Image (tube, rainbow, N blue to C red; front, side):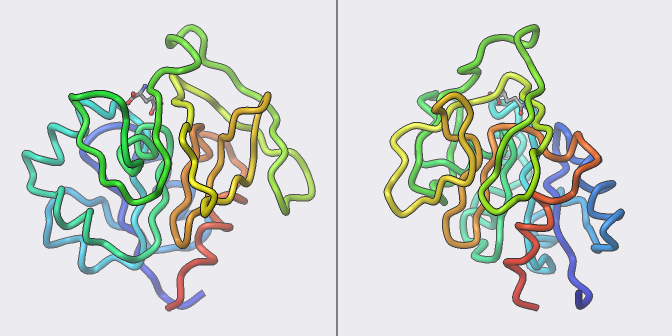
Length: 188
Ligand code: GLN
């Protein structure tokens, strides 16, 4: 792959794990904390964490508009997926509305109800170990959004144009296939 830089929003949450995984794939990364950094990125990851806290920090750091206007590939995991949706059904959260789905936070229950499950993903030859931590559920999914994986009838991995959303945390496993799938969107 040509030299690319993937920005990882590093205000809060599981951003280092994404960085470690991309480093294993020899992909350049930048931890994003300031608006002017966004322009240098070929893609952007919005990690898991706490979407209410991230909303506050995004506003504080004046990152809302630059992220909303970013038109290159984006990958949102868990809280990141919540932020990228159209509606998080929560007045404390400002969503970017980048993908025509809504989200329901903490829809699988509390921290103690977090779980790991081997899931089947469209196009993958074997199961993927998915870690769910206070995961959201996706609702009101527009027909233009491709569902790449579901668990017990609930969509958990979505693709829309160059945007990928997972309700789980692929960065917490040693399996790099979901990140590699998303990196295929890079046109550089
Ligand atoms: N429950 C968190 C939220 O609503 C998301 C949890 C996570 O990212 N693991 O923001």
